[in-house]
Image (cartoon, rainbow, N blue to C red; front, side):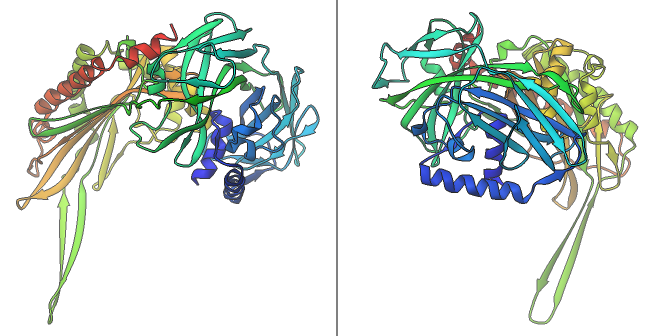
Length: 540
């Protein structure tokens, strides 16, 4: 499954995966087999969302990337047209029972709804046509980038280049990219035996640009990851990306966006490997509550100073109110079975609503005092983009076994969003922030966990906060931080739950103290690491 997802990522995120030629071919075959085994074929085009684009000036063959083995007929300096056809409203991808062509030439079907075609460099537009066995047709036209960029030298070196990324690196360019637009810098490195282009930063274009050492310490890696990396046979790539609207759109497609990329780069010898920033972690204990907050590295996390307004995407309370366990013990003569039942009295929705009405203003006051002003919840829920979230949100539930209840018109956010809605600058989060004039979206969830202690049935609170930001580039989601608070003790209760007892169960007063302290600790952590401001100031 991981190889299948890597293959899909080649098209969707522009990542390249690989190692040596033999291993590349083996991984490529496995990825295609795994993906094809789960392919779903469609005879109609009504539920299809195309995701992909065109890349120009493909890199040299001796980069030996997974991409070069995955896509057929690699041509250094050539063009790659690649599209993945995903389902519009649910998870999954489609193979089309029919044909997909570019200017009349059939695209190769790879796996997981992915089609591609590599050609010699050509500045002509490409008409992408889909034709299904049911007779449906759809088409749209894309064009390769006219904004070419050439990497002339690195630190004044044109060939046999050595760089020390623990120091600033200067790139000299010949470029048609407009001033004040962003260029992306990436490095081909090996991670756990797989070579990939890892994004390092975005920087404003110009004939000469400086990449600070902080950027090389904060490349786009798994937050908090501790994998082994190698910079052997490293390739420094510079690219210009734009998100374009296809023209001459017809058939079942209303609108088609595509990524348009132009690449260039040079091999570099890395003389000193940078010590990577794994992100910031703040932990502590207060009022018999443990807290942990985490901020990814500077590529994946904007500085908190970027937050001017916060929108609340979701505030919800949920819990398991019934738990039954059975234990069996055996002696030489008997077998004993003991069943333990833990149960919290079912509460009407109005009770949970009343509790959230008390919690919400206090949480928001702290968030506003420590981070930034919070928009009225109605501003968020009335925004057009929020209707997309609602379509995929979880329904409220309230049974004798569990409950899940969202505040006012917010929704319990589902972990699932279709790829066509869920990532990058075209995703619903970014659309929502743009509509409401926010720089961040916060999701807050309070869980109640039932347990036993000292012969009593107990309930313990656990609070989770996630603050997400606008994307870095077109596909890279960012998070300002995540925060988790968990009570180290539970609270007993009677059968007749009162509002005061509910507040005691969720430990409202203690929760607010720890919530504030956890945010303050994360702010203090960020102030000790200047990388966040340095990396993001490159885009100003």
